[in-house]
Amino acid sequence: MSSEPSPGDRLAAALRRSPIYVDPSLASALPEADRARLSAKFRGFPVPVFVVLVPLVKGGTWSDDDQLATVVHAKLGRDGVYITFSDIGDDLRAKEFGGDHQARYAAWAVAFDRSMDDASLAARLDRIADLMLSGNAKKEYDRQSALIQKRAQERRSESEPEEDPSSGGSSAVPLTLGAAGVAAAAGLGGLLLWRRRRMASAHRAGSALLLPRTVFSTAKRASEDQLREQTSREVIAFGELLDTTDVPVSGERAGDLMTRALDAYQAASKTLDRARGVPDLAGVLVLLDQGHDALASARAVAAGEPEIPPSPLCFFNPLHGDAATRIEWRPIGSRRRLRVHACRDCARAARAKETPDILMDRRDGRDVPYFEADPSESVWAETGYGHLRDDLIHRVLRGDLNPK
Image (cartoon, rainbow, N blue to C red; front, side):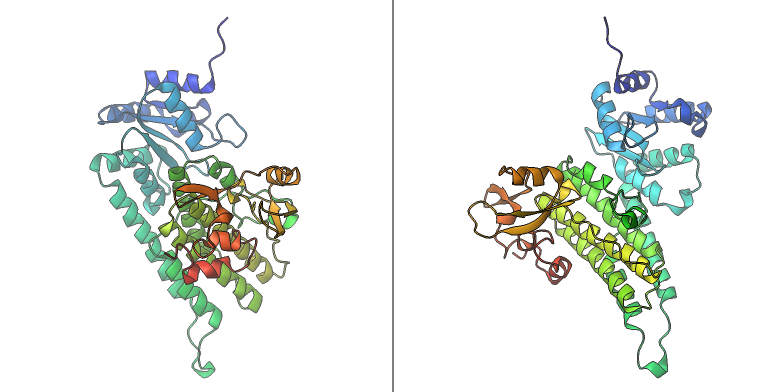
C-alpha cells in the first residue's frame, strides 16, 4: 500500500510541471495569463527559478518562508532560486541553492521600494526577475536602503522643535533622540517586519512594539549564516519601527526610556557590524529585545500607563527565548551562586544537576560555555547577556565588544 504524498512532495510534483505554483486560495492574486508569461520569462534564466505561493501560517503546514523553500528544494532535488511569500507579511522572499544570483537582494529591494507598495504580485515578480538578470540587485538594495535612511533623517529634522532663544538651549530629550537616531540608522535601510509577541503578562500581550517571540523559535535552529541574516532583518525592522512610532517624550521617564531604546538600537547595529560568531549574533537579539522593551514602556508611560514589564531571555542561551523561571545556580568548579532566569528546559536541567543546553563560544581553538570566556575579552561573559549586570547597552556602546 502506497503512502499518501506529503505536502512537500505535492508541491515538488507541481513544480515539475510548471515553475510557478499558486495555492488555489490565492489564485486571484496571480491570474493564469501572468503565470504563463512569468513562467516563460523564468525559463530563460541561467538558473532555475521556482515560485511557490502558499499561505504561511504559524502552526500550519507551512510556518515560515525558510522552511517552505528548504523542504521544497529537498523534495524537488533541483538547485536554483525559490521565491515565496514572507512569513511576516505579503512581501516576497527569495532563497537560493547552489549559486549566487543576488536573488535575496532582489526580493529585499522590491520590498523596500516605496513605488512597489501598491504593485500587483505579477509586477513585483517581474521586478525581482529584472533585478536578477541585470546583476544589480545588491546595488538596488543598497540604493533603496539609502533612500529610507535619508527619509528617516529628513523626518527627524522636520520633527525637532526649534530652539527657544530665551531658554538658553533646546530640550535635552529631542536633541538626544535626534543624535542617537541618526547615528543608529547609519548604513541601515528600513522595512517594517513586525509581528505581535505572545507573553504571559496582559500588558506585554497588548503591546505591538515588542520583539516577536517567533524570532527565537527560528533563531535557535538556524545556522550561523541564517542567524546573521535574521538578525540583520530584525535590526532593520527595529530601526524602521523607531522611525515610525510616535512617542511623546515631554516627561522625564518617557524620555529616558526612549533614549534607552535608541541606544539599544545603536548597540545592536554596532554588534551586528562586528559580529564574529553566534555568541555575538545572540547578543544582537538581546540588545534588540531590551530596545523593544524600552520603546514599549516609553509609549506606555507617555500614555499614563504602567511600564511594560521586561521578560528576560534565557541566561544559558538567549536563543532559547523567554526565561520565565528564576533559579539559583552554581557553575561547576565555582563557589559563586548565581540567581538567573532560564527557559523551562534549562531550568529543569539545572535543578536536576544536569548540564543545561549552554551557548558555546570558540576560545583558543576550543568550545567553552560563553560565560567561561575571559570577561575582559567578552562582554557577554562579563554581563551574562544582561543577567549579571544592567549596563550591557552602555558597555557595548563604549567599546567593550571584541576589545582585542
